Structures are given as C-alpha cells and as structure tokens.
Length: 331
Image (cartoon, rainbow, N blue to C red; front, side, top):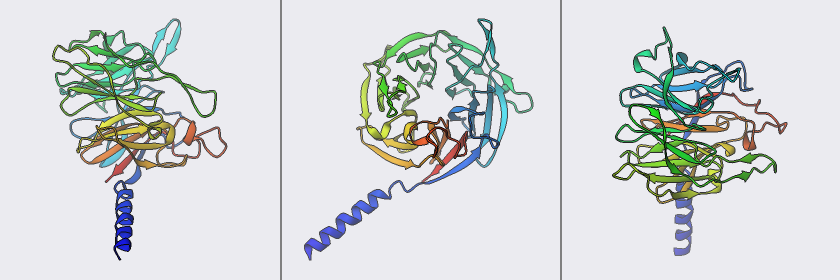
C-alpha cells in the first residue's frame, strides 16, 4: 500500500513539474504577411513604459510599433542607410531599449554606433529619424540601461561590453567576456558571439549577458566606482544553445531565447535551466532572438534564420513558417 502510494506521489509530482510551463504560445502579429524569406528582419523586441512593443526592421531601417491589444504594425521612426566607402550601407540594428525619459536607443553594428530617436519623434504621422548618440561601439549588438541611466552595449564577436555616459559620445571598454568559437552541428558553420543580448536585473546593478557561442549566461556587476566586476558564469546548458535576448519575468527569473533550438528557456539565478516552449520549423517560434515582458506576458520576436531546428523539410530554408513576427507566451 505504501509502495503504491509512494509511486502515485512520484508520478503526480513529475506530472505537475512537466505542466509548470504549460504556457499558451501563439503568434501576436505577422510582420511580413507576404513572405517568409527574410524580406523583413527583426532581431530584438522591446516595450515602452505603456506596454507598446517596438522592433526595428534591418532591411528598411523602419522602427515599427505594435499595440498588443490591437496588433497592427505601424512605422514610427527609421534609421536611414548611409554612404560608406562608396557603398550604401544599412544600419542592421540588432538591439533597442528605452530610457526612463522615453527616448529610444538602437544599436548599429554596421555604423559602429548607438543612435537615438527622441520620444516626441516616435510618430506614425511623421516618423522620426535616428541620430548618432555614441560612437566606437564595434559590433554593437545588445543594449541595456543601469539604475543610473548609464548605457551598456555588447560587442558581439569581440566579447566586449561598452559603457556610454549620459551625454553619449565615445564609448569606453567596460568589461570583456572571454572569446569563444564553436562549430555548429552542420560541421562547417562557425558561431563566435560570446556577448549578445543583455539585460539588467530589477535593481539595475547586475548585467546579465547572453553568450550565444557557448550557450551560456554571464553576469557582471557594476561596482560602486562604476567599474565592472569580474564576469561570472551563471549557467551553461545544451538547452541554451544559441542563447540571446534575455529578460526577467515578474518573479525575477531570466527568460532566454535559444535561437538554434527554436525554443525559449528559463534560467534561475542559481543556475537551473528549464524549457518554457519549443517547436519545429513550422513555429510559432522560428529562430527566436529576444524576449520582453509586459506584465506576466512574454513577447518574443522571430528572426527566422534557416539554421538548426529552424530548417524546413528540405533541410535548407525556413520557408515553411510564418517568418518575421512577434510571438506571445501567456502563463
């Protein structure tokens, strides 16, 4: 009798554990209704203080706003392409974040800059043009503010974290994530991005960095003098393959887009890693690259690169899914 009861309890506990993340996953909005072949590319989704969502299309440079309650994409700003060395170069913005004042800051790896669109210029009637805020950010990728309104930017392949003062200008090297390169399961593709998406904890004192190359999360503290503490590894797991675009949920747990696996996972601050959602190349997750919370709801953008678990049945493309889009994950 005892043995039967114990077996029942074990099964019940395991069943409960497996259903902890029985979240509802759905497409909020299709950002490219006519195509799934990357004619629209969005790498990061963020939200303003009122809960409106924003992405930047790397193809056109358009900054797009989406109201989750009435999800129709609206262009409210743009980053213009530039003439560089005799060629027209697009910004290829990878990260965006709002300041407390409501201004939008965006990375541009192509320009090696951080650009800004003022709150008043985020206007669907007359979309505002981004202007240079900071320079010297080689490989500019992820972006985040600390509690004092100081801006931090990841350098992607170079593993650097840059620090930018409130008035912008030249960025300074602040921290270094150790370089690392891995070969993907196809045996030929190289992945060498140890410093990708970033987010500060709710206190704005510790920066969490997604290490896409290792499938890991690092943390770096901001010391009293503003200098960086020594980077410390929080978690490394096969579940974090392709880690990018982290954000904290209201309970203080870190959600991470695992792009190579078409998955979203959760990392506790003591290093435990659990899967939230995962699917094949047909979606709704299609090479997801960032997460942002509005209340208890997580929003995830689809970058939709044809790699790993996002390869279609032909083993080459990602054309069997929806393409550039925003996914909603509800508890």
